[in-house]
Length: 248
Image (cartoon, rainbow, N blue to C red; front, side, top):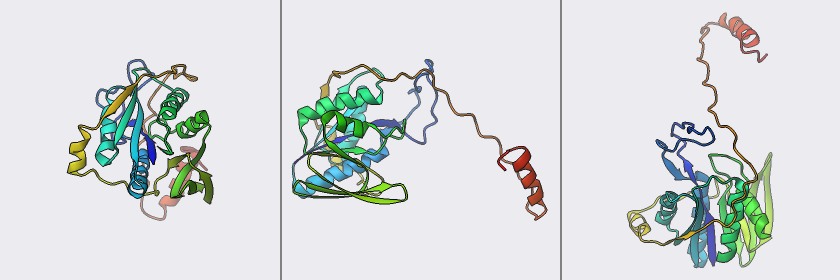
């Protein structure tokens, strides 16, 4: 079985983000980058599938040369090979998905894993967009997955409940938290990651459909106010909520 998993490099959620001088992207200077957390669930599920059925796992990503470090983190977990669609240009979700689809068609995997979303832009659409470009079925927000032969059964989250979806391979699976518990890389995996191959590909499509005009940080939160701890403070709290916060 050939298993592809698409991963992205994102800023660490604990990093203090600064806006770049062009006001259209973040300043990468002091940012620590990590593999997208939802993609770790995708990587783990790909590895579990290989352990059960055998085959080959391939990590695919889009971005600058530095993204190879993120691919090597997937290697350390156990992924076999990597492909980087290398570009210094800022790409929107449409362009990323289009280039991923072109490369995935060449790889011709039996199943393709994504995280349900990236924690930087949170648009939750690249996995399903890529599936659409390839003309394949996709199942998103997956929390449980069973594969028997070519038959796929997935449990996914929906508003207020869960849904069971069936499909046939090849299929796209967008992983949600709870699908599995991603493994920690061991020393052997970390050492092997240094020598595993990463193939460079050039993007074929560069026509973005959207453009970032301006980026700015949210306003800092106002300081909290303690009005007291006695029952009499309730009246003052209600007054402040009505007159200052204007929420009641």
